Structures are given as structure tokens and as C-alpha cells.
Length: 279
Image (cartoon, rainbow, N blue to C red):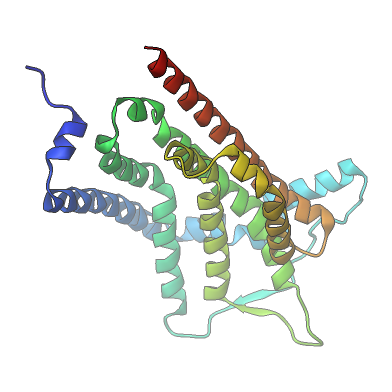
């Protein structure tokens, strides 16, 4: 007799066994996150000067790219950033240390995402039957690819746009002196959120596999999605049409990709049903 499959093993597991397996996977994920966090904590100078504080310097890669884009499209220097008018301050004894801890933990999660996602997937995968497991092949690779694409988009596009708009927003003669922790939370939350938002096609894929969404349903909400995305883009970017389009287009593109993913899933399911009915 052959060895029992992973699905059979998982079906034989009791509730406490499932909890134990979940605890084990979460423990492995936490070890990975804290290991990377410790490395980033030790590399404090490089992390802050090269990554965290880079979006507030005029020579930041994204600012130079926007300036070149403005010259290329003929709108002049409207996208160029020549100076940063806000300064960062620390107002509490634990401010610097707390910011250091926050950056290390969030950075640990971001850089260890492939390992963390792998652990989550290893907990889910044994519960899939043959066709589901086959259809989900490569999910860790594509999930990681989408996540890091979102992180890069958030870091190089949304975060600097938000910092420039919010940091230079003035009321009367009130000068912008931004608390360090506020700056950190803005950069970290935007970057991490963008990474998670870019998982939309993958989420739609699984929802379509479960029969919870259809391409028709997603298309019917396309106009609503457009309004939501444009409102979000207007909030987090400067009051400039070009900047809002730069933010909105990728998110709308991901939604369209999700529709096509759902369509492909439904088509494959219908083909399999026809094959089974003819057998």
C-alpha cells in the first residue's frame, strides 16, 4: 500500500492537531521575522540613511525619475522636487528607540515575507485535493512577486508623494516640524499596505476557485472600484492630476488582472465539469 497523501494526513488530524500545526508554522514564521529584524536592528545606520530617510532627500531616485518624466512629457518642472521643507524632530525620550524598533520589525516582516508566506502555505496546502493543489502550484512565487512589486511601488511612488504633500502642506505661518514616529509610521504603513494591496489578483484567484466571485460580479463593480481608487489617490497624493493617475493606474490594473484571473478560473472549471459529464 502507498503512503497516505498530505490531504489524507490532514483529514486524520483532530482539532488540537490542527492547532498544533498552526502554532508550529506561526512559530517558524516568527523566528524568520525576528531573525531578519535583529539583522536590520544592528544595521541601523544603513537602514535609516539608505532606506528610511532617502524619500526626504531631493536626489531620491523617484524624484529624479519624476523630473525626467515631466521633461519627457512636456509639462516642465512640475514633477521636479528641488527641496524638502519639513524637518524631523523627536519629542520624547523613547522616540528614537521606538522608531528603531518599529522600523526593524516592519522591515523584518517585509524582507522575510517569502519565508512567512511559505509557512502559511504549508499549513493550507495539505488540505487541498489533487486538482486544487495542481492549480495552486507556484502560489508562493507569484504571491511573493506581487508583494515585493507592491512594496516597491509604495516606497518609490506613494510614500514620497504623500510625504511631499503632507510635509509641505501649510496653514498660515505654521512651519512643518514632523515627529519622527509620525514620519516612520507614514512610510512603513504605506509601503506595507501597498505590498498587501498588490496581492489582489491572488486573492481574487482563490475567491474564484471557491465560487465566491465571478468575472461578471467583478465587472459590475468596476465603476465603484474606479471611484474608490480615484478618491484614495486624491487623498494620498498632491492635488495634481498627473500624480493621481500615477497612483490610480496600477491599482486599477491589478483589479483588471483579477477579473481576467477569475475568468480563466471559471473557464477551466466549466471545462472540467463538461469533461466529467461526458465521461
